[in-house]
Length: 123
Image 1 (cartoon, rainbow, N blue to C red):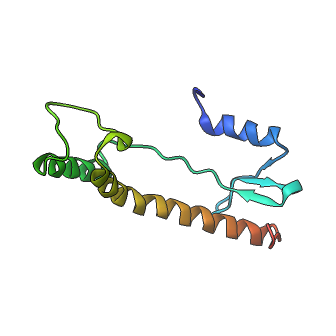
Image 2: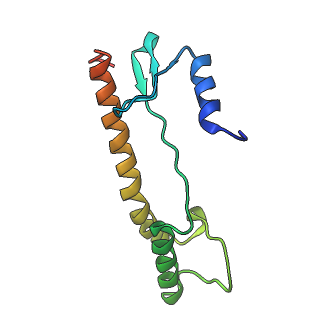
């Protein structure tokens, strides 16, 4: 497991594979270019914030699962997507999907902008 600055470690990894770390700019642009392979890449990381809207939605789902008998829990427990009932998994994924789709759409925009700014339409 990487400790500390994940993005720094990832930049080093990219350089080790012949990639270039693109300079940060005011415009939304991608993070990496692999010129030999004609690939532009954007790094996105997912972070969980227990006080976020996601946390509240998940708590509401878990309360519903308990009422419906799909989850048995007493006190403070940790739940895992892989270990809950399939119905619960589907419902949980429905609240995860929109934020992840937004992140992917943003990354795709950044890649498109970078393709245009570097004049690499086939990347």
